[in-house]
Image (cartoon, rainbow, N blue to C red):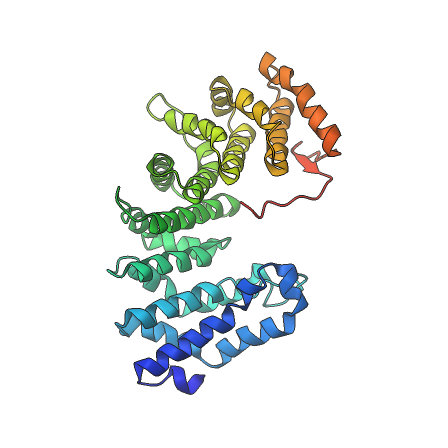
Length: 358
């Protein structure tokens, strides 16, 4: 592999990079940490092979100096697969391969991949542009150091400036996904937050996405991005339509959009009293009560969580009281019991559930 990827023959190099993509695609065939645990030695061997063959540095060189869009695209695919690492269940916390160590993200960042990816988002080749955006999202996910570099290089504005009314839906979806990941890192990383101008810019673009296309993924990504940011923004007469739109998304047909909307409203209820009162006045409770009879367990559970948060926060208006009995009835039927976290009184389900769909 080392000899092939370092060849001067573009066809040989393309073949070598395609083989790297095929090898790294093991993480998509075995697409959960648990599944990868069953073949952990093989997965580690693949990642080690890519690193030890010096393929990483060569791919960075190709992105810097080559102009063949087919090879560039394959390099970006490989980097997208490589960035998050093997992600194998039960990896010891002191291992370099533990997801929180961000080993491969650090390697890529050291090689200068972040400014390269931002540059690639502006190229004329659509597939290359889109893959660069996805690779950037994979690097940003959960990693505040990468997030800070992206922000420092004006990455937020670079991505926002790519958006226009007639942008193709797949590229728009990729941008919404990457920006929502960036927004998520913002709040989880306590040591570093975005300045208000970036928060406002992101809220505006996520709001634009909510009115742009009726695409499930784009709507869900935008709502999740807003769930991190809206509690930080002042609610005014001029911008109240953002919260109204978030509430109205409870009526969307797609399960993921309903769940993302509930996630957004839960964040507001936990974090901002004024905004919480506003969404209640906009019938958030009534629309949520309708979801207690929805034919999806995850949606019903999310609806229960939101109602519970409102009740624990002290919102004891008639609307909430009217649906508490429905809420308790659903809990009884589903055998969903509650424990209480004495630190913040948020519900911790005793019954195991997953948010992987979001």
